[in-house]
Amino acid sequence: MIKRIRLSFFVALALTHALAGAAALARDAFPLPPSQIYGELFHRIQTERLFPDSKTFADATPKADPAQIMTRYGLAKGRPEFSLKDFVNENFTIPDAAQSGFKTAPDEEIRAHIERLWSALTREPRTTAGTDSLLPLTTRYVVPGGRFRELYYWDSYFTMVGLQTSGRHDLVADMVENFAGLIDRYGHIPNGARSYQVNRSQPPFFAAMVELQAQHEGARALLRRLPQLEREHDFWMSGASTLKPGAAYRRVVRLADGSLLNRYWDDLAIARDEAYLEDRETALAAGRPEADVFRDLRAAAESGWDFSSRWTTDGKLASTRTTDYLPVDLNSLLHKLEIVIARGCAQARRSDCQRDMTARAARRRAAMQRLMWDDAQGAFVDYDWRNERRSARITAATAYPLFADVANGAQVPRVAGAIRKSLVTAHGLSTTTEDTGQQWDSPNGWAPLQWIAIDGLRRHGQRDLAAEIASGWVAENVRVYCKTGKLVEKYNVRDAGEGAGGEYPVQDGFGWTNAVLVKLLAIYPKLAAQRYEYTGGECRAAH
View (cartoon, rainbow, N blue to C red):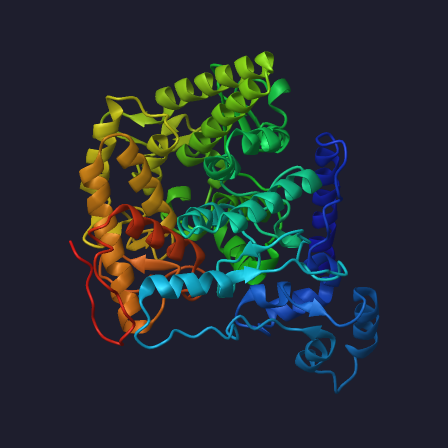
C-alpha cells in the first residue's frame, strides 16, 4: 500500500512540475511535503494516530537532516524495543499551538483585546533550513491562530481589512509583499505557507488586497503589483487558450457555447498531509476511485469551504465533487481580478491589456449571469458543468456577485431578499441552509462571509439588511467574548455560541473574526457605543 501511495504521488508530482514549467520564467521548484520525505514513517505516525490532529506532525520540525532520520528509522524500526512515539520525540520538535502565552485580561474591553492580539498573532520571517514544511517568507505576517501557525491566503484579506481599520498599514504592506513574493516564487499564492499546501491556492483575493493597499498608498501600489496580478490570472487560466468546448483543464472549464469559467482544483490527487488519515477514510467510504475523491477533497480545501454540502450530492463528505462545480464566489473574484488588472493596465498606458482584460471580465460576467443566476430563487448559485444544471442550494456565496460588482441593479434587491429569507438569523448570516455536521454548513456562521455580504449589500443600497446582519453578528461575538474571553473561528448563528463540526475543534485567536469585528464596530457607531468587557458573564451589543 505504501509503495502504491508513493508511486501515485511521484507521477502526480512529475505532472505538476511539467505544468508549472510552462508558466513563470523563473520559479522555485515545489518543495516535497512531509508525507513524501518521510514515506513509511509518516504513514505510520498518521495511521497509528500518534497525534489527535493530523496537522501536528505535518508541521513538525526535524532535529536532523531528514535523510539521517530515515536512516535511523530504517535501522531501529525492526527492533523489539522500538517505540514509534519515542522515536518521533527524539527526532522531531512537535509544535504546540496551545502555548501562545497570550491571556485575556480580566475586564479587558474587546477592542483593546483585539489590538493586543495583533501583536500576538504577528510573526517575524524566520530562516529555515528547508527541512520542515514551513515556506520561507520575507516580511512580517499575521497568522489566524490556534492550529493555524502559518500565513493563509484568503484569511489574510479579511485580516487586512481589520489591520487597516486599526491603522496598521505597515502590516498590510508587509503581507502584500509576502503574497507578491509567493507569486514570484511559485507562480501562484499557495493555500497556506506550507509545503503540503503549495499545489493548490485559495479564493483569489490578491486583487482585493492590492486595492486595500492602494486606498492608503495610492495608484502606485496597483502599478507596483500589476506583474503579480497578471501572473495570478495566468495561473487560474492555465490551459484556457487550447481548451475545446465541453472540456476542462485544471482550473478552467470551457462550456459548450465557448464560455470560459473556473473551478477549484488541486494539482495532486492524494490524501492531504494535514488530514492524511481522514482523507483515506473518506476515500474508502466513497465507493469511487480514490484519486477522484482525494482531488475533490483537495479542491474543497482550495475553496476555503472545507467541507460543505455545497460540494456534495447527498450532504455526506464521501460524495464531495467540488471539481464538478463552477463556483459563484471564485468566478466573482476572478471578475474582480480582471477589472483590477484592466485598471492597472490603464494606469500603465497598456491599452491592449486594458481592452483584453475589460473584455474578459465582460464575458465572464455574461456567462455568470446566464448560468449562475437562478431567477426563480432570486439568487446566484453554483453551476454543475458536468450535468449542465444550476445547483439548487442557496449559500452565503450568493453575496459575492454584489461584493465583486457582478450583479445588476435588478438582481441586487432580489439577492437581498433571498439572503433574508434563507440565511439571516438572529446571530448573523448562516453559511448554508443544510445542517450536515460539516463546518461550512448551517448552523455555523463565519466572519469572512459576514463581511462579504455586509460590504456588498451596503455598497449596493441594501443598507438596512447589511446593518441587521452586522448587528446580530457583533452581538454574538461580544456575547461569547464577555463570557469566555475568546474570539473564535466560527459561531453557531442558530443556537448561539461557538461553532462546531469539521475535522478539528473550534479554534481561538482568531484573525478574521477579530478583523471583521473591529471593522464593523468602526462603521456602525451605535454598535461601538458601549464597552464589551471580559467578565465571565453576559453582555449584549446595542441594537
